[in-house]
Amino acid sequence: MIQILLSILVAPALAQFDCADSKPFKIVDTQNAHVDVARFFWTDQAGQKIEDAEEICSMTVSIPTYDIRGREEEAYWCLKGSSDQVVSCPMMMDGEKSQVFVLPAVWIRHLATGTDLRDSHFHAYVVSEAVPTAFRQDVFARVQLEDLKPVPLRLDGAHKDGEPAYRDGYYVMVRFQP
Image (cartoon, rainbow, N blue to C red; front, side, top):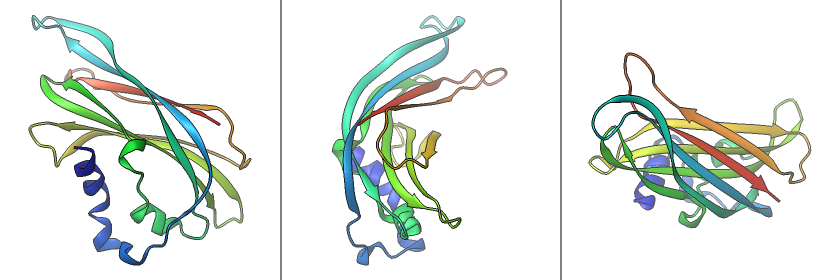
């Protein structure tokens, strides 16, 4: 399932950017990303309307920091982490067996203004087991710091619908630790 997700995320790149000639990106350091995922839900098992949450998973992965300066577009289309850098957790979402995938990453990038930044971010997606090629409820969070040294930080992101939809949602917290 992780390989399917990574293929889906990069497949559109083939039409946008030729990744066949992409050279490896320089790794400048490695750090841990501790990921916590919780699910929000509106109904209990009996179908009664409630508002509650449950912890889904908690996991730490080791991720490299890539220097993508001058190659930002190429990185956007071609740079993907390995499957051991992706957090994958089974969960129920709107009554369907699903998986949530969290992809934490750290890039050193260069802005047109001349500023170099340390960009720490994550993308999270929910994929239904019934339709593994379609993802929904995309969550993205990032912070960009002018200090290029690794520092501890915490990123939070969530997706939750309320009235009148009453669809399940989820919350992701990623703690980056040098």
